[in-house]
Length: 306
View 1 (cartoon, rainbow, N blue to C red):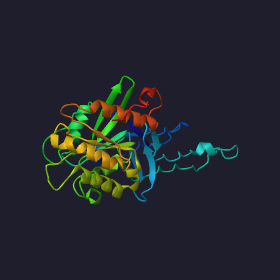
View 2 (cartoon, helix red, strand yellow):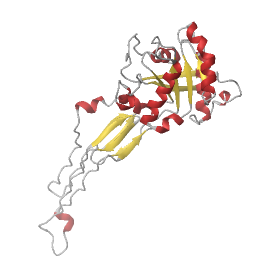
View 3 (cartoon, rainbow, N blue to C red):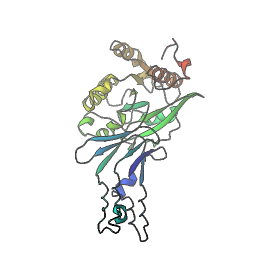
View 4 (cartoon, one colour):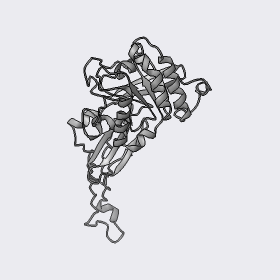
């Protein structure tokens, strides 16, 4: 039985409703010296990005990150040999044979982690779904209440005819997400494969919250989930700069976060301000990381990333 990564699949839903799979048995030998036939191989398709774990030990057996990548999860048993295989000149009709052996059985667990170049993280209602709809071909559900996004959204951002990358819009992370609060813990695993983070912040209507504290909370929750995540390349994206109260804060945020080594970009998904600069800044950073094999050298220039 072989597991193959298929680009046509996006979820593991089929395995929720059918959890047991059996390969076909071989056929026994027949009369007149006829051999039995082998059982047909079984191929199970899973989405690209699926991890395969041994259910008993928790060992990672395979990480299927490439299209058509395959892993043999169970092997069929050795076929038997009929009595004619043991015939000799002095014993032409032996009364014994070699029985076949049963195939292997295994219980595994599939875990799907999205494959995306960029992870878009932020609080609920920070405007992540709106931004990904403006940057890419994704059409997520958008509404003015917390946790509108209940599943991660993937969008392809095209910069020009030769350059595109995939952005994952991760459902809202809140304080305590790494401990199970809100939806964050359920989806934090999906950002583990991303090469670059966009921290989306803005001036919230809640007077007890501000963009700087939101950014620090997001970083803290990512660090609690996996300390290595905060060392990934990132941009801080201040959204809704079409609002005067937000525009007034950009310079101060850039000064404070810039002193800590963070690059701050400002955009408005409503008016489109800063979106092209954001697309190209991300493309340059991904190219610098070697996320593409070549052909995008035009993005590696000395121009400003903002």
